[in-house]
Amino acid sequence: MHIESVTAKASSLKQGSIFKIEPLLFDGQRNGQPISLRFQDLYPEIDLTDVKYGVVFTQSCDLSRELDDKGKKRSPSVPYITVGFIEPISRWFLKKPIRVDRTLTVEVPGDIPLILIDKVAASKKMTEVLLRLIQNNDPVYFFLHDQEQAFFSFSYVNLTKAVPIRIQNYDQIADASIAGLTREFQGKLAWKLASLYGRSGARDYEKDEISSIVDELLPAALPNGVGLGAEEFDQCHKLWNNGSKATRVKDILDIVANELSKKPNMKSS
Image (cartoon, rainbow, N blue to C red; front, side, top):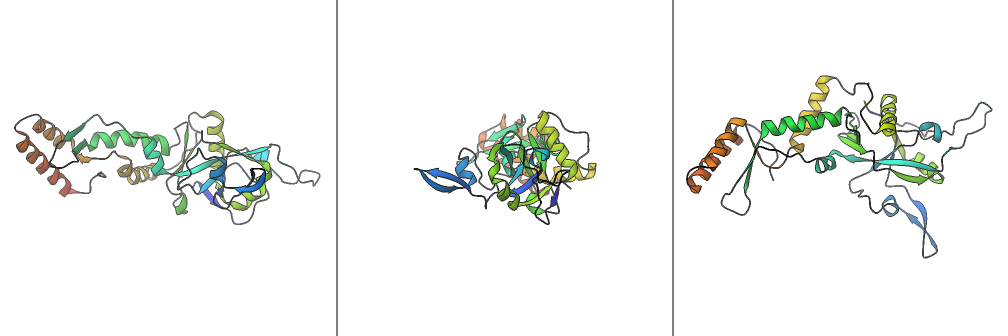
């Protein structure tokens, strides 16, 4: 499990604290008049569409407000809280489109051509990319998934998309906090933020869990087109380069129809 729920207001924020973005309002000015600003107003260059949660990047020791040895409440040692954003995995798919070598564009009646893809080759290539993300081997992206908390299923954080928030907003971020990373993944986040390279030695999931996640994400990650087996793809490729156009299109469509009748296919445009 990556994430633990916050059942009571914590006295201090921690690295990995997860908070709701929507209720946050920050003090600002416009034409000399005080106004309240949303996150999107502060950073209009960042697209926060469908982004509901942020995560604290700043180290826990710099944010501590626990009592010291003399019983005095500590003050945070930094002027800003650095935060990132938890984004749905669908955004990552847009950032990481794979290039498939074995594709074939068939001109069929109508305005939209038929795109055929060797689904075996495409799946193999995309599986490698997904495993790199899921096992947190990607230096830039931090993968989050928690089956027990559906709103964090299949998410990621872009570690280079970090913004500062003044420490004066500490209390409202703490009030908006609803969860936090488990101890293991707090350490992993800290390590990745420090290095932006590789991953910690702890294993994220068991092998069967990783396979299950890949199987669930793979259909959405593959490029648009009709997926064919390697043999069927080769048949279509040969047909497209031989014979009359009308005949070869008919034969190719027959192969595609037969393939689609076997089992669910990859997404189509």
